Amino acid sequence: MLAKATNTIKCETLELLRDYQCSHSKELRNQLVQLNIGLVRKEVHHWVNQCTENYDDLLQVGCIGLIRAIERFDLSKGHAFSSFAIPYIRGEIQHYLRDKSLPLRVPRHWLTLQRQGMKLAQELQVKLKRQPTDTEIAEGLNISETEWSQVKLAGYNRSLLSLDAPVQDENEGTTCLGELVPDNRYRSFQLAQEDQIRLQQGLSKLEEGTRKVLEFVFLYDLTQKETAERLGISAVTVSRRVKKGLNLLQRIMTGSEDE
Image (cartoon, rainbow, N blue to C red; front, top):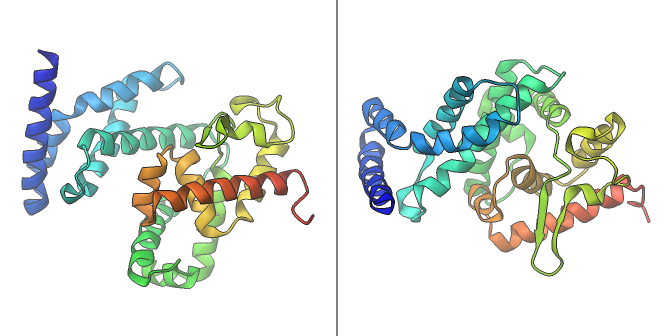
């Protein structure tokens, strides 16, 4: 009975998505949100016991992620909508919790510019068939290159990677990012302030494409396949950049980068 209901929701969702991509009607979007609210509730139940935020606030935040997924879903790629939407829902909740917990407050318009810049960078990469420069991104956002540099720097300084983030490798099995830092005693919420700074400094030294892959996989909790789709590269390239980035990060943080 449950499987039948799930299939019904999937069919109705796909039908509404087809109509929405043609009309972009708010009414259709709201129907899609109501039809898939269960995806948000499931994710909220996971997070509500791990923080001090209340259920209703997290539900609203999760719905924003669901709306973003609805707006960006591409039927032609053949993905299941639920699999596509969950990273957006989860990411929106994680961003919200991170904004509430971090002592460093970034102006809201900078946060908006950061999101717009990431989206624009992906579009320019596809169009130009190369990584766009900071000048090109700044021009696309109608801001100065100096302001864009400040926006990026603020993003680096406020975004923390969990040391418990899993690292999957077909050859070496599964490990975690925490095993790559010098002191294994520190984990996600016990990470010393100096290690946080060193980690951010290490990330800022990485080549932009490699850094973005690490951010998508570990910061935004996307799979390597989802990361590849969003950056317009192959999953093999993502896997290589993950390995390369982690190796470089390890060398930087252990002081052996010049050896």
